[in-house]
Length: 69
Image (cartoon, rainbow, N blue to C red; front, side, top):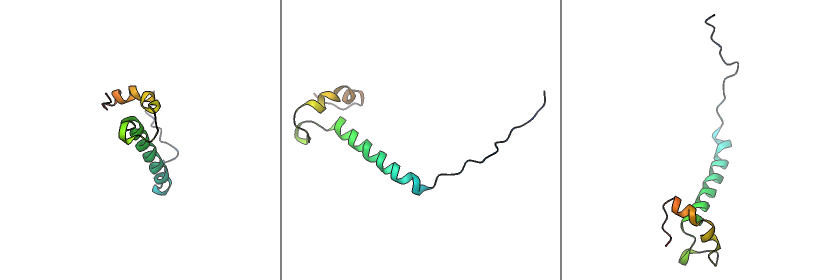
């Protein structure tokens, strides 16, 4: 056996912040929307009438520790 070390032929380049920022903002807004629907979409703060959204995310509420009844 020989003691050869293999070095990568290319060096990874950093991604500029200008390319990451729009996607990070979009992902953050989607997460805030998901947290709203899972955590607060019922009762007085409900944007959608009825209990459809509440029942759809009911198990997720308990999994994340949100009380709902």
